[in-house]
Amino acid sequence: MKHTIEERMNTLKSEYESGQKMLAELEARRANLTQTLLRIEGAMQVLKELQESDPKPAEDAPGIPPAAS
Image 1 (cartoon, rainbow, N blue to C red):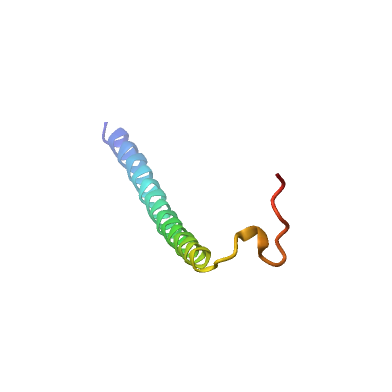
Image 2 (cartoon, one colour):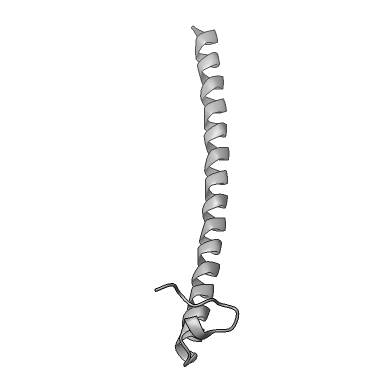
């Protein structure tokens, strides 16, 4: 009986450590994704402000072909 309890305890400890490691990895991925989304949001804001301050339509901008009608 004591041997069975020890085996189960070791199994649970191993599973717990594995879960802790997975949680840490997920938290790191979440932080990275949050930073990426913030950078994208900032870039979108800059482009929006540039678009609003440019009196020419985007089709007339140099290097950008006109949209097909």
